[in-house]
Length: 405
Picture 1: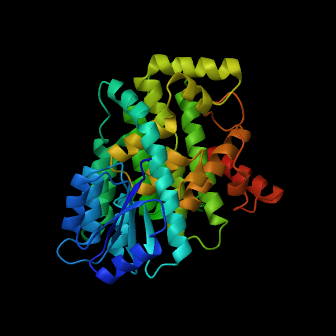
Picture 2: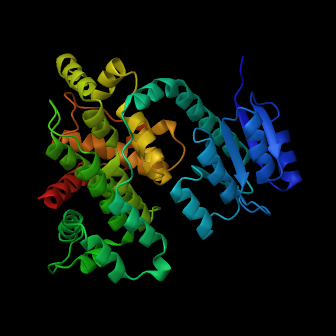
Picture 3: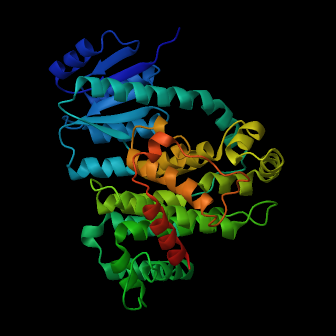
């Protein structure tokens, strides 16, 4: 039997010793390294499924190390082990997807075990499906590149300390469709402005940089990847579904008192982009997508089941591959990959849970179309995280209708 392998990287030998003592009875192959350089050397020689790295290390720190791991071994699951959860660089690295999760240091023994088990389960699941997915990806003529407008805006936002709102606004104004989209949202009921927002600069100020980032990204993706007319694919209805999911996910996160405004913005973006895999299927796998639609319609089943039957993979897997290819933040990659199976992902739990619930709600509210011919059911344990009273559901539906008007 082949056991999975975990690599621990920490410059403190006593930490590595503690981990080895704690986990000696687990059925994993354990490797350890006291530097990023030695960790990379092990990765070159051994098949590693999970890397857990300290952040603060000399020469090559954990952030630099996991960035290289992501570039060289993208299918290896990556986790930070650090006592510096609020450190700006750590937060940025998590947002960029260099690591998929953060474990506190000092850790709680059982929590550490559970996180590792969950991460290895995720790695095993990905490995099983990777061969089928890779065949699909290899059949594409080419993967779409990251939209140019988004790259320019993203570069500005990454250097926000040295870039003015005027510069960001000027850049956005070069694209009329994105400018119009920002103005539309800034004037929507979701953001509750009492006066008309009539300039891109004002829209940026009203929306905030995280929402602007998400809207520019989603509009760029829809314009660059959107398929032409395809049997069974209604782009306008698809966009309405995606927008409604973004709004609903944001509203759901706002109901959780321990979440922050930034989490609401991330949930909004994740909801907007959760179904990008369907765009890839409809544009690049047109004939197979037609078969998926026909199968779902004739068998009155979900697209997910029809995708498994026709492709052997799903829009979740295809979409998350593209999101990772584009180096999108991990919360987007994870939401795209796990929005139908949120319990299988340990990272960005609340955001993925919100997108999962939002996806189901929006379909039951009949706002837009996800392409399904049968209404999906949500995971009861995930739904239990939100206090979804009749009053709350009614309020969410009313907000959605107003915002989409």
